[in-house]
Image (cartoon, rainbow, N blue to C red; front, top):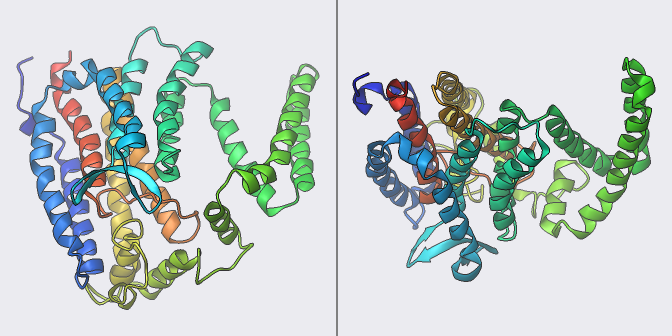
Amino acid sequence: MKNQSVKKNLDWTCVIIYSLLVIMGWLNIYSSSFSSIENTYQKQLIFILLTIPLIFIVLAVDGKFYEKYATIIFGISLLSLAGLFIFGKTIAGQRCWYGFGSFTLQPSEFAKAATALALAKYLSDTQINLKDVNRQIQALAIVLLPVMLILPQPDPGSALIYSTFIIVLYREGLPAWYVWTGFSAILLFVLTLVLEPQYVILLALLVILIVHLKSRLADRNIVGSSMVFVLISGFVLSVNYVFENIFKQHHRDRFNILLGKTVDLKGIGYNTNQSEIAIGSGGWIGKGFLEGTQTKGGFVPEQHTDYIFTTVGEEWGFAGSLVVVALFVSLLLRIIYLSERQKTKFSRVYGYCVAGILFVHFFVNIAMVVGIFPTIGVPLPFFSYGGSGLWGFTILLFIFLKMDANKVNEW
């Protein structure tokens, strides 16, 4: 088939949604910072303008380049993360940035795309079977390597994003028990913080007995069920020790506030409380652009970054918030649709990685600002202030759009 132009084959639905989100994000950054002396909205406008040549560069590169050099790109990304421990700039207790004068660059934002490429490259090997334990370990190692470099910075928010790759691996054949184990561990951890450990263990025993008795292979599964119960009991009994001795104080405070065990509206819970007030005050249609009293008064800290959605809720109300959510959901569904129609496994896996990364960012950020998730510093894609985040998400998305535009040549 004759080569066709990228312009003709580019998925303009994704491009339009992306453009709308970036424009709406800038308007909200402008609203939350127009009275600030820092001129944050002007800096963000520069970041947005710089994405234009960045997009052209990503689209100009042949789609096969990303597959051929995925491992090298991943290696460079790991080196950039490791270099932070020596050359990194510390801001607010986190060593997550390289400083170039007044300009900073956060490599973890670009590491997401690099990890997605590496994972897609590994899984696109026709010999890969994720039912094999060795293959599972190798695939999980690709995901865990950047996490091990990001956590000590410390940046738990960025590290959390990599959990989405488990769903991608499950889509490609990873046994379901990995997903269920992760979900169960999170559930047991939270339940143990709310209830006494002995009650959680009794509840787990009840669930195991019900599953065991309903199993057709009950006689054969008694040893396995007993082992599962022992492991769960050990995990539950270790939760309080981990929570008190491994978690840092501000992490413990955020969990205690989220679970209603502590009320600290002037301290660690101030951000979440103010964001809930701001969003709630917007009502159905909002107070209007630049008319948010909470926003104009600067009552919500970090409103132009992690808490940018509070500006949407206050000034655009429920209706505006619904539009933003609809745009994100539409983009995610479109990416999944495009992923399913890819002609190569590499492109399909990478597309699912893109959808997963964007979904976790979108879901966790909004859950965080409405008070149903702890504050851990996860930005809202295309909305939150920051050049590294905007460029990282742009590269992540447009690499996939380049692959999709090239699929007409991949027969």
